[in-house]
Length: 275
Image: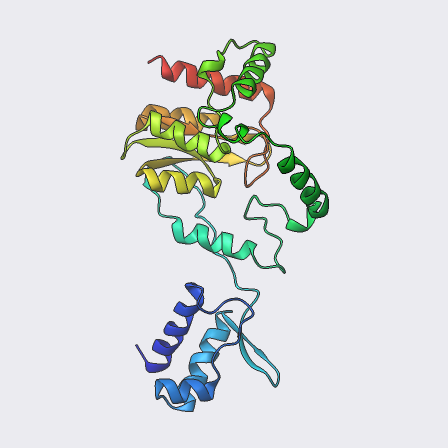
């Protein structure tokens, strides 16, 4: 490796780990020459290489800055034939989340709304009023498995839709991701294979990586959701232990599966569970 490439690699590493952030000034050529003991030509070639890669940009009469338009890597596309794959996504997810902090970026890669959409003044007023009138013991009523009154209301809602579920069987979680993670922990062991959509929600990939699972990627269409034929094939071939699917407003495609296809999906999974 040439000296200018080594220098460029060092600076790109500082950008990748967040030491140098988007919009921040990069050490000047003079500073690099003095601190790294390289020639001005070497420093200039390193910066030209970084600029060609889109990592830094020149600002007239100001110097070099970390580019605010750096590309964020995206997950691989689904393979044509379903096969098991180990997942390693932690660094990729951190890149996506880091990009969502950039005020100049519309974060289509994350599930966070813009903080400017929240009515902060009203929220502050309501929170203050609520805290003043709150019963201190109410802070422990919602400990796992959750508020009894809330679980009863959920059970009644299930009943309204034709499903008989006892309030004792319901667990209140801190969000959908906690519920899905708990479900995977109950149903799988490290090394098991699960079916996920391709492309998949990055939170799903994080859970899979954390639990040491393998995945089978099932192609998903923006029009009507997951490919049921490919899912059936994967279940037959790979001993799928669980399926992580979003049938309504799938993240990231936004696909919603038609009701008839949802019924086909439920029938397919019921038949697989009975084998």
